[in-house]
Length: 607
Ligand code: F6R
Image 1 (cartoon, rainbow, N blue to C red):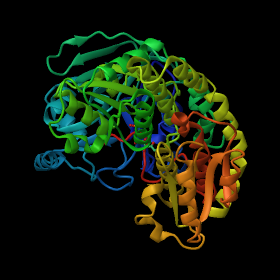
Image 2: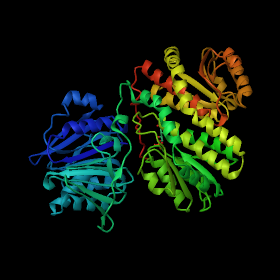
Image 3: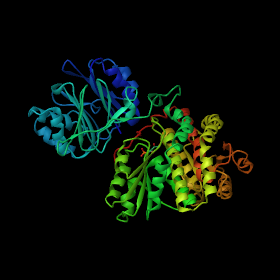
Image 4: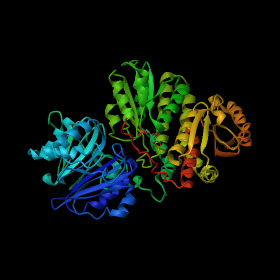
């Protein structure tokens, strides 16, 4: 949450780059935006409440002097969105500027202490204590970096902080504890950001900054030190394979639609993961006593689907736990013989990272599935599978979900081989069907997109919709309902079709939309029974079914169709796609921006 960018370059005006970098970070929060540059030893600032385009129209973010600056796009925690609460924040003399992501837990006592010393704080944020504390330390003669080291000793919480000062010109200083920061490097320019896409058009060379480290960036040098003992850190540059083009809309009206269309390619690239990487994950799982899968949101739905895949293909049934509730659920029932599969596309979700840290206290093994190289989870895990979706910019996860499912399917098949639960021919057949998935998903998109648009115009004003499925399709239904809630704001609930008659059916009356996920698998017959129950109460039935399933289509009012048979363990991959499209067109029909759902941000880095 909250996007951060900082850049120091030898010459040229930096403001237009900062503006564009913030646009690429907007998925992290979009209630306010701010930029500060330094020119002629003076700070220039433009900041306000609102989305970047709105603020730019009012203030013209491109017109600011100076070749170094920092910027921030905000997802409010302390203090509502307002000009005063927008970052950057400053000291009493407008000489130090700070942007911050995270939460300073002890900000109240620090604020009180600063006020007593005569500092004037203007905002309601926790962040503002930082520049004022820096001011005091710099007054004692410390450099900006030394002052930030002192500040980091006093603040409690999780943070990524980027600061610059006219008193220590030509340098950007940054530190982190619990929130992401990556450094970008190119001849004569240094970048720091919360996310790689911010500087992707300029460089693919990245250096990781780890928790408890501080970096000083100039145009010629990047110096990293450990906060604990001041020792210097030598770290290699990593080349990122993502392209700048992947972080552009490339002619699509929204990132979400582009990313739905990129799913076949994302699956294809993930299927090319090194077999050893998959095998190692499977081996850790196989050798563990208890296996847990943990995740949040959409990644949680991939986890639920993964659980079905492991059970059906490998005879291993992991427990699924929401990462946020993990320690409250398992208590001390963990050991070094157990393993956790942690799924997080960003690799930064605090709920998931905290659960993993908790498990590590018991020496439990961690297998991570993430889309971001160098993200926090990769440094905690014993083994990591990096999915190959490329950067996902739309806040609603689509293609990263698809590659999580792809990697889980690969691990399940490798696990099946190890456990011998299925014979070689069966495993080979399933693998071959997985290889055909990119083409199938591509066909599903082309066959259902227009239908999704049409159905959205029929259902957009329905206050509530029910999504029902059985078995693995329960995860598909959950994901369909989540997508609709988060971008179109219709109330939507997913239930097991079996459970639906134990309460939720009371909601159903004439015209109430019920969406059934009904692939041609073992659940199909029972699903028909559930459809009939809903129809008998006047529900309007929308079903996602296999093409030519005449029984199913005859009892539905509307259908989305999947063109061919699919292995039951992988049905979620094609069957979720019409639901992604449906949500997208529902949001559009209601006039909402699907890329920037209200109250949400791409990476949830608060507990
Ligand atoms: C929904 C969505 C969120 C995330 C959740 C976990 O579209 O994007 O529900 O899935 O916040 O995020 P990661 O996968 O980054 O841990």
